[in-house]
Image (cartoon, rainbow, N blue to C red):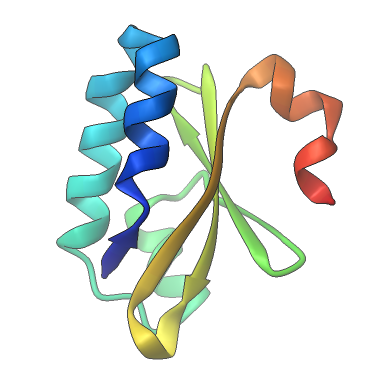
Length: 95
């Protein structure tokens, strides 16, 4: 899979430095994967949740959430947002 916008990861890690290593681990694991279906994705990240056309990944022991669009047929993961658990719970990311 190809991860599109690592810049989102860097910007979030600037605000929350402890998130950098878990986010890089997620990116490396994602790039090493080939997901053809949501079931394939779940085999890599069993705690991933599917909300409409988005996938929500728990990062750093569920301390952070990464929201992404996954285009299986193109093998691309677009990062929409990286949020703290508190920001995620507010729900503004759903819009």
